[in-house]
Amino acid sequence: MKIGDAVKFIGFKEYRKPYSYIDVGIIVEEYSWEILGEKRYDVMWPNGKIGLGLFEETLEVISESR
Image 1 (cartoon, rainbow, N blue to C red):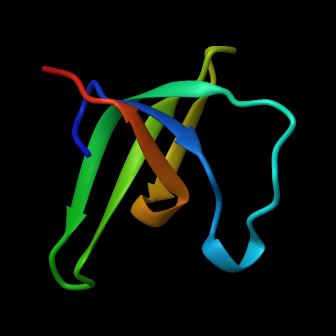
Image 2: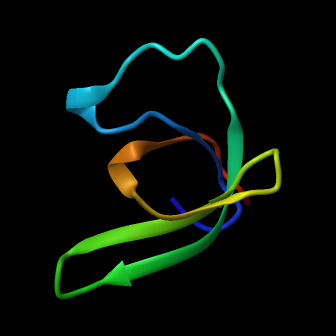
């Protein structure tokens, strides 16, 4: 995943439920936390809100930016 990729929110594996709608957002920021060995992402959603610090495993890339 990288800035500019289109993603959808899928949630954590153990809590996933089928969603009746799919909002597609764009990754606008990436954080790499070397100490914890994880990445987090900020995603801008269609309503203009920004999801902050989303875990990589809660997002699914549906279209990669070039």
